[in-house]
Amino acid sequence: MTATTPARRPAATTGSADWISCPSCGWLLYRKRLERNLSVCPECDHHLRLGARDRIRMLADPGTFDEQTCAPGPPDPLSFSDLRDYSARLLEAAARSGESEAVVAGTARIGGTEVVLAAMDFGFLGGSMGIEVGRRVSAAADLAVERRLPLVVVCASGGARMQEGVFSLFQMARVSQAFAQLRESGLLSVCVLTDPTYGGVSASFATLATVLIGERGAHVGFAGPRVVAETIRAELPSDFQTSEFLLAHGLVDRVESRAELRPLLVRLLELHGRPVLPRAGVPAGTAPVRTEPVPERTTDPGPAARDADAWDVVQRARVAGRPTTLDYLATAFDDFVELHGDRAFADDPAIVGGVASLGGRPVVVIGHEKGHSVRERVARNFGMPHPEGYRKAMRLMAHAEASGLPVVTLVDTPGAHPGPAAEERGQSHAIAETIMRSSRLRVPVVSVLTGEGGSGGALALCTSDRLLVLENAYLSVISPEGCAAILWRTASAAPTAARAMRLGAPHLCASGIATSVVSEPPGGAHADPADAARRVRAALVADLDELCRLDVATLLALRTRRLSRIGGDEARPLRVVPVSTGGDDRAAG
Image (cartoon, rainbow, N blue to C red; front, side, top):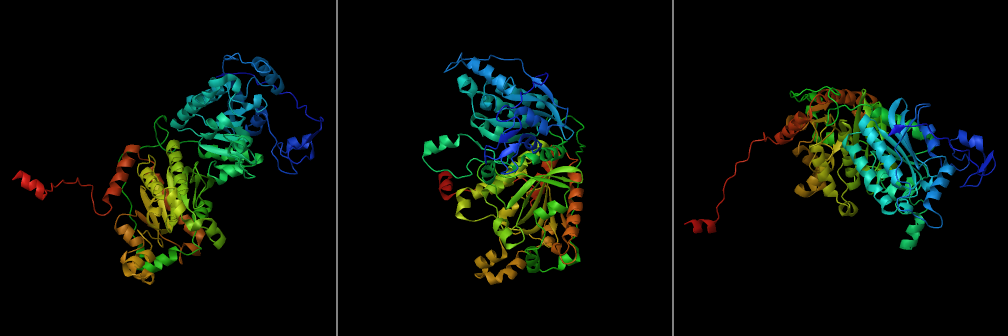
């Protein structure tokens, strides 16, 4: 790509020079007031469409956009003609939009961070993707890789460009490959999905970015609602294919109003400003590295924890007032941008996660969330995740690994949701894949057991380099009530079961499962949540300071050693003992 002078967009000519009608509510709006409101109707909050230049002015720091262009390609590869020649349509689109194509791309700064910024213009043939759009988007991704910059793309498209036939279709593969290289390079990419984003654009680069942000009220999908309704002969939901619909189904990370887009981008870029850990493709010296092993620290639980009754620990771990993941994110961390959804089915509110800052270090945080009130607990399914919750966790782990960010998990769940819908969607598979993924994650993983740790549903977020356990928290293969019902034949024996399973911090530390105990304020974490957050923060910072100095090979070797030692196995090689059968013996004789 090469720099060029930005083209000037012609002034809008629709309606009066001073007034414009809102296409949603019909209200007559004073044009200057509408522009001051970022072209959002003050009466109905409808977000009117913006051109590429307006998007760039809204997002980029003033005066920092440096447009880049590619050498022009073949303008009409099929010599296509319908009611008019395609070449004539291109000339008309350029005259109307003031652009040479449906994408404007270049470098800019957003909140002081240098980025590659591309914006699509729906005014140029409906933002349709043909060869030139594919070339420009791919070139923007290539430029981001070359200069190691984040990529921000604002999408607006009606789909593929029919006049370029199969050449247009294959631009989906071209831009997808470019975004794959971007992901392999560990660079942040953000796609802002605006109204409308359909067809080949939505089924390629628009949904392949690291972070997907839907503008409020935007319509996004593969096939348009009219095509869908006519094809399946069914009535569609009123919010079908809106940004809000996508968020509820786990397909975008966030939905933001137009005024909130730039502040969110600034925060995301700051949190991804520098990789914390060395990884392939990152220049040497990006992060301090040492290869000598760091001894695991096992803190004495203290007399109060050692003398605590196991059933009392269980009861305190379940107190509704204990701080939850969102509480710790608001108090122990410096900033947090929540990212939603598994990009496949739904956004599970029992698992929250995103990118945070802790003592100046960017991290990815994933945790169970129960809520406090009855309404919150019901909405969060009492912190019991469905498969989509664990798949969201895996997506965030992959994001952490690609970005070179350590992972912090906060664990507090009675267990994974056991219902039939969860089984139909592969609960066991999701838990197993999460455990396997975290066991080989190429970045440090520090887990904090803050309350209940029920079975595999908790272990999915506990497979880590360090496991910190709060003084009144526990980890168990089954709930005490479940154990009592099976072995004692009555749930009333739960206190006896808790003691028999040695639930609590002392046993976790003595067995080497927990690496340290975080003491709680007098009366428990719920008695002074702010003090509890300070203690958790200090413990996390100390462990991350040590782990982030390790190279990848050492980190993985130590994690393997730690997991293999649990249960007394010091990773001794297995000795194969031949077993003979009667038939084999008779044959040998």
